[in-house]
Amino acid sequence: MENKIKTDDIKYVAELARIKLSEKEAGVLSAQLNDILEYINKLNKLDTTNTEPMSHALNMTNVFRKDEVMPSLTQQDALKNVPDGKDGFFRVPKVI
Amino acid sequence: MTNMKDSKLYELTAHELSEKIKNNSVSVKDIIGSVIARIEAVETKVHGFAHFNKQDALKKAGESKISGPLCGIPAAIKDNICIKDELTTCCSKILKGFKPPYDATVISKLKSAGALLLGRANMDEFAFGSSCETSCYGPTKNPYDTSRIPGGSSGGSAALVCADEAIFALGSDTGGSIRQPAALCGVVGLKPTYGRVSRYGLIAFASSLDQIGPFTKDVTDSALIMNIIAGHDPMDTTSADVPVPDYTKYLKNSVKGLKIGFPKEYFIPGLDKDVKEHLDEAFDLFKSLGAKIINISLPHTDYAVATYYIVACSEASSNLARFDGVQYGLRQEGETLADMYKYTRAEGFGDEAKRRIILGTYSLSSGYYDAYYLKAQKVRALIKKDFDEAFKVCDVILTPTTPTPAFKLGEKMKDPLQMYLSDIFTIPANLSGIPAISVPCGYSKSGLPVGMQLMAKAFDEPVLFNAAYAYEQNKKWEIKKPAI
Image (cartoon, rainbow over all chains, first blue to last red; front, top):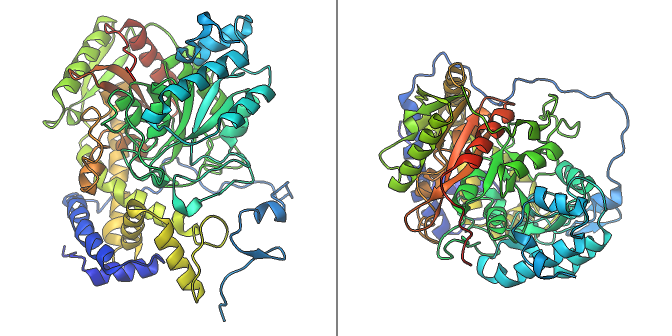
């Protein structure tokens, strides 16, 4: 499988991950990720056609609790660490 | 007051100190005094704490409960486990100043047991690393040789217990982050079964792999701490609703008839000679105690590191999306909302965090998902199946914890892949969700600690404690404290 990651690919993925990368960082990362992915490609030696994917270590599904109001954080506590907040809200740069 | 008799209280274990408190031969004040004096003597060399404040620690000692199984026992807590109103930063700039508004479940439990939470242990940023070198506060040093790494990511927790700056510590283990540093620092480190200990309040790295566990000076303390922190928690939907036994009941000095698996895939050509020698001795010791050694095979071992880096980085890229300058921590202003996110994350995350987020985002992105993430999940199933088969014929599996003793600071920082490969023996237990413990098994010729790992099937911590305790009681070598 061909997966030579180019600097432009790294920039695209960084955009998806919302991280601003410098030209230099993107260059270093593309070299490192190529090495790592080349190593990871060894997984392709294994035939997994009939193997079910495993997403979780324990076999449990649908953990529900009763639909009851329980104590939870107050608005004040939830906003205690906010870098920029006003009137009980998170404040961010203008979106529209 | 601390007198001569008590001057080395800091060297004792939690169970020894608890005994002394119970029979009134020492006070909580004596213990904290001794531990703080020790911290003041060695911490500048070790740098195991990310956050420590002497006045706060003394204040807590003054207010500490006079009951509870861990009454007055000083503990260090990894910097990624939330403590209400105390700095919890994952050793990352992006969580600068963060003080959680709630306690993690393990913290509530330790507080109820009377433990004294001394300070926050240093770690690799967001637990991304195997050497403690990616902490935004700088690296922790190995107390046995300060030019070497303590292991990671819970390097601070391991080094503090090793250097007697804390009686025990909590860490978290996603791919070996408790067992690897425990081995390299010569202490006991346990990664419980996935779901055995609540993750509520543990800042997530890879949610399907993370577990909190104890660092202790001996196996008895490990069982004692597990009695307190294990158990179902409605606040963590992945915690298991399985009864918790009294683990101290399994500290039995007999392994007669115990079937110990010897997996040939863990005894690879790259294995350090001293490590190999100590493991051979451990197998011999178990044999002499009446255990049976069974040859087993875990054929997919060689694929574990590759599988892990896809699964762990994919989950991390998703979990770390929450650090965006809106709710907590660092914020870098930008013209638009997207720019604010990008500048904040560029400034707040270190190189390794960026590398893992990018790798994870890539393997989850459209066009690559099947080739990487889905493929890795399938290989993960094969790795787990290896263990299911092995535990049909043996009770525990004995392996080295790490391929080599502690390496030098800076040695692997330029080559991420080499760093990743140092977790080669610890990763399979996380992928399979099974419990594993690292126990000291001697020293290399140059005096560095060597650790052995015991793995068991899910929820069989009892057999780990049994085997580890019997080894500890019968080992033929002497413990040498680090000369720091």
